[in-house]
Structures are given as C-alpha cells and as structure tokens.
Amino acid sequence: MPSIRPFRALRYSHELVQDLATVVAPPYDVISPEEHRRLLARDPRNVVRLDLPEEQPGDPEDERYRRAARTVSAWRSDGTLRRDVRPALYPYEQTYRVPGAERTATRRGIFARVVLEPFGPTSGIRAHERTLAEPREDRYRLLRATSVNTSPVVGLGEDRTGLVPEWLREVAATPPIAELVDDAEVSHRLWMAAVGADEERDKAISAVCERLGANSITLADGHHRYETALRFSEERRRGPALEEEPAWAEILMLVLEPVEGALTVLPTHRVLLGLAARGVEAFVSRVPELFEVERGISRERLLEAFDGSTEARGGEGRMGLWTRHGGAILHARRAAFVPWLPAGGSALRRLDVTLASVAIEHLAGIDAGAVAEGRIAYTMDAAEAIEWVDGGAAPTGTQPASAALLLEPTQASEIVAVAADGDVMPQKSTYIYPKALSGLVINPLE
Image (cartoon, rainbow, N blue to C red; front, top):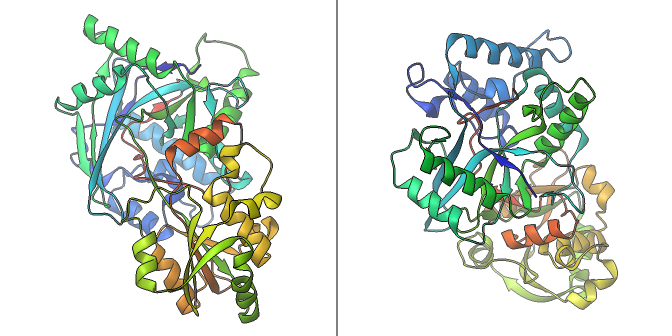
C-alpha cells in the first residue's frame, strides 16, 4: 500500500514575492513556446526557469539543466525560496469553470510526499498511460541536476471512511496561506497542516496519511515524472545507504480523493491527417462496418453534442465524424469491434478511445506506426477540430487535416479500472483539467 508522508516544502517567500500569480506556471508539458516566452518575461523568478529551463544560444549539452540547478541554489540562498520549518501536508483547492459548460466546480486534494514504488501487480501505485523516451530523458536530466520536484504528479486515492474529505472541508473553512487566480481564471488556494504544533492536529494528519495509504493510488497525470523519479531513486540506491528513509525515494504528489477531489476529464478529439480525397471517401464509406451512422448532422449539432456542455459522460461508444462533406454521429456496434480489439482487460477494451484507435486503423489505414509519424493531431476543442478540417490546416506542421473524430471524455472510474487491470490506455486518452500548478510547493530531495 502507498506510504503518504508530510514534508518540508520549499515555497516562495511572502516578503520577496507579493503576487504568486507572477511566479507559478502550468506543468511543463502543456506550456506552448509562446506561453513559455511570456512566463519567462513575466518575472525573473518564475518557476518555469526551473521546470522548463530555456536553451540559450551557445549552450553546451545539458547546460540548461545546470542553469536550472544554479537558479534553485541562488533562490534558496537569497531567500526567494524558503523551506518550511516543520513537515506538513499541504491541502490544495482549485475552483474553475468547466470548459464548454456553464457551471463551476471545486476540487480539493493534498500535496504530500509519496514513497516511490515500481509498477507491477503488487504495487500500491498504478499507471494507466504509456510514456515516451524523449520526455523521460528530459525530466531525468532536469531531476539529476536540480534534485527538486517543482511540479507534482497527480494521483487518485480513495478513503472509504469519509475521514479525508471531511478533514479537507474543515481545512477549507480556515484562511489559506496562499491564494491566486491564474491566466485561465482558475482560483487556487493552499493551506499548510504542520506536524509538531498541536497534538490533535498531529493525530488528524497521521489519520489522513493512513487513510490515503489504505488503498492503491492510480496516477492520473505525470507518468513521465514518476518514471523519471523511479530511475533517479534506483541509481541513488546503488550508492552508500546514508538515510533510512531518503527523500530521493519519494515524490511530490497531489493526492485527490473522489469525494472532494473529483476529476474533470476533457475529451481529446482525433483529427486524421494526410488522407487524399479518395482516402476520405473510402474511410467514410467503410464507417458502417463498425458503427450505426446518423448522417446529415450539422456542424452546430455536432458541436452541441461534443463540446463538453452536455452531461454525456462517455463510455457509450458514441462519436462524431466531420469531413468537408458534412457530419455524422456514430454509435459503435461493439460486436463488430471484437476481432480488432487489443489484448487486455474489459476496462481497456470497452473504452471509447480504444474503439476510436481501432476504427482509425481498420477503416482509415492509420496504424500505430503512422500515428508515431504524426498522422493524427489532437485537440480538446471540438470547434477547433472542425475548423482544421474545413480549412485544410496542418496542425502538426506537415500534412493537412482530412477528417475529425470527436469523442466524449473518459470517466475517472475508467482510468482507475484500466490501471487496476494492469493495462495502459492509448496515447492521448485523457486530459485532466485544470492542471496542478508548478511552484506552489517544491519538494527538495533532502
């Protein structure tokens, strides 16, 4: 079972940084080049200099990682970053407008250190996503240079007793130690529950750690960072064992419990690239092999059905199709998919994203190799997917958009079910919204 622990975080000094919104950032993997430039210019102390260090002209290999390490050291020396005196759990709240919907939601979780465990049948930490070598190597070189976690991974825990959500609600009724509104108009609040100041609080913190560690945790976001941390810890273990519970064997995690920390998962639509006119015609003509088809669907009706504003939760095998010839709504004939489904448990085989992958390969001839070569583009915005097709845009910079396959979101329960079976989802199956900020709490591996 997972081990959840308080820790002494590095945090921006209130005295030196009056506006946290100027120094925090989204996770590295969702920052566009334009946003990266904007964050660098916003404040010389923005955490992006640590989490996504820029490569400067004339840099030798790995110099940007060494620069990030020097920056961490300098900020600790001049007081920009200060380490909390006592170990603590850090409750965290995000309030946000659900994209595509006229409603707001609030999600609460806990920043903590979690002991690293290799993935496997007996592991307390489960994965649902396959990682890629290039970003793993990037994160490893950064971690090796800096020895800090600037950005948390996100895990889905479960407390069947109700103690953790009740504790989070009680904490949320008290003044936070930090709050801000980010560029996406998401409101963030942070608290600190420190160990050693009050006996009753200590008991509550211990109980929270125990309850969150009573069941397996499923990674929802941050698989590359988690696997990087595993590699780093395994290398450190080869050296002399100087500590009984070394910090490098742990990782910064935002642990969400489903009652107070329910996920908003956005759909990730697929746009097929590089199909000539005949290829599009052949694809559309073969769609009835796998789907019941409602034809003559307008752009407006497709957007209404797949822009996220409805209460559709996904999992029913319903998809939207758009080409320059018009739209359709597709309903999967599951029996027709059976010969083409991948090996794995029932949770993986019933996913809408799995059905979409099968349809794209079987009907359009875009297999895993072609996907790796960039024949699919992805977007969370159904209107953008349709615009790409209508305009013949080349969203990856190479081949033009030919057809859009619009999906409903994958449910959080399906993420947990797939991970519990030991399976991994197809690439770009989930997009967790909003992202946990980088820089609110930093975990030094010491």
